[in-house]
Image (cartoon, rainbow, N blue to C red; front, side, top):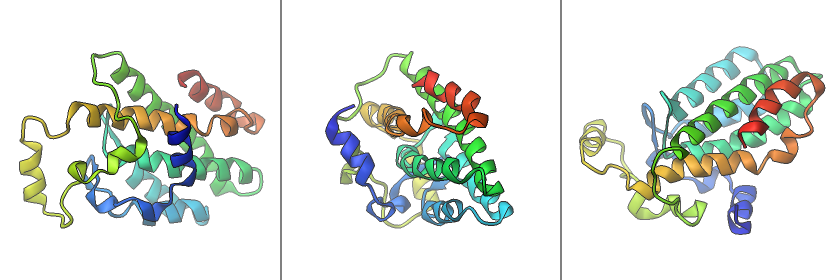
Length: 196
């Protein structure tokens, strides 16, 4: 991974990402920032479970990753690091750390499955994923989106592969945190590290 991409991942803010213009498995990522906020607070378990479900089901579906996925992985990586740090004193953080480690393994497996197939090279920079030509319309129109999905090349090959490559890169940037997990998370963390 280039230093430019590493710096981009490190400094990216939730507000830098036009979530409402990024595709997910079931629409657009408009509500992602709200769900990140719920996870980051690590308060009541039920809202955390609900937000985690909304994020994970929209980020990955039957091995397919979406335009919002690599960006969401950046913020889930930060949330995982915080959850691991607080896991011994916060039961919600403990739950979240375990769930996120399993989800990270799932995302990395999707990357490896895609990487084994013939594919284009990824876009040179993570930030290239937000070029205007790749973003969907400002206004969400379900019918318009469905028509766009019927086009032959809904995502150019390099953009589509970048969903996978930069999801991997986002996890890779948190490798240090994954190598220093509390002992009880050593197994799931090792499974993630093996896929890196």
